[in-house]
Length: 360
Ligand code: PLP
Image (cartoon, rainbow, N blue to C red; front, side, top):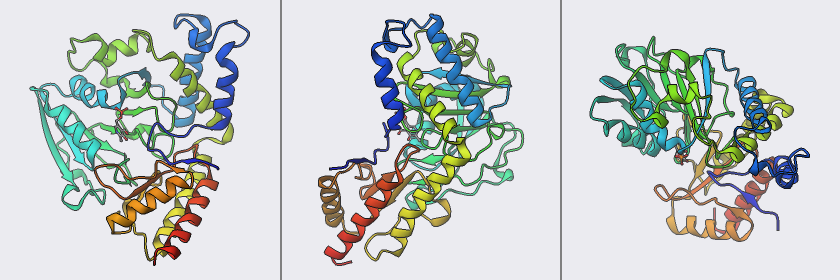
C-alpha cells in the first residue's frame, strides 16, 4: 500500500535527500566518519554550515544586512527570545490569528517589562480569516509587529505583508518558509522551526536584520541574538545533523528551480484540493476563501461522527496524519514542499469515493 504522509510537522522529506543522507550516514565523503559524528569545529562541518547558509540566502534572496542563525529550542523559544531581545521597556504589537499567535502573545506578556498590544484578532470568528492591517493601526513607537504568516492549525495565510512604516515586522514563518513569495526586506526578523519545509525537528532558523541585534540587554547568553550572531551559530554545539539535512533540502530546492518553481507546484497541489472541496456537497472549508493557506488545508463534513469515519477510513487506505488538530477537529491536509502531487490526486479520488458511499 502506498502511504501518503499529510503530517503538519515533522513533515515529509524529499526522497532523494533521504537517500543521500542514508549513503552518507556511515561514511561522510570518504572521511571514515558518519556525518553525525563530525565535530562541529571541524572543517568538514564548517563547510556544511557555510553551504547551508549560502543556499538559504540564495533561495530567499536574503540581503547582506541580515544574519542567518541556526538555533535550537523550536519556534516556541522564539516566542520568548523575540520580546526579550527587541521589546524590553517598550511596546510590542501582535496580530492574533490562531493558537501559535496566542502562544507568542502569552510568552511576550510573561515578561514584566514588555507592554503587549494585540492590534487585531480573528478569534471571535474561529480564526477563519486574516484581519486587515492598515498603517494607522501601527504605533510608530512600538518595537515590532508580530505576525504568524501561515497558521498551521486553522489553515490561513497572510496573502500580503502589512505596511508598518518604520516598525519592523517579526514573522513566525514556521509553516510557510520557502513556500511563499514574501520579500525578506519587508521583515525585521523571520523565524521558523525546521520540521516542515526545511528538515528534521531540532533546528530553528532565525533571519534577523543587523540593526535589531543588541537592542536590549539580555543576560542569558544563549538567548541573546547578538551572542549567537557573533559566534556564527557556534556558541554551543549546534544541531549538526539537522543542519546537514537542511543543507541537502536547500540544495534539492535550488536544483528544482528555487522558490518560483516550488510555489508553482505548491499552488497547483493546493488548487486540486480546494477545487475538490468547493465542488463537493459533503466537504466544506471552514476558512474564508481570501485567507486560504496553500500549505495547510482543513476541511470538514459538518458531522463529527462522519469526520471520524472519514479519518478512520483514510488511515486504513494509507493516508497518514489527515486528522485535524485536536483543538479544531475535522480533517487537515498539510501539503509541504516535499509532498507529492500524486498524493493530492489520490486524496481527491478517495474523497469522491467516500462522498458517493456516504450520501453526499
Ligand atoms: N509556530 C507555528 C506556525 C507552528 O506551526 C508551530 C508548530 O507546528 C510552532 C510555532 C511551534 O514550533 P516548535 O514546535 O518548533 O516550537
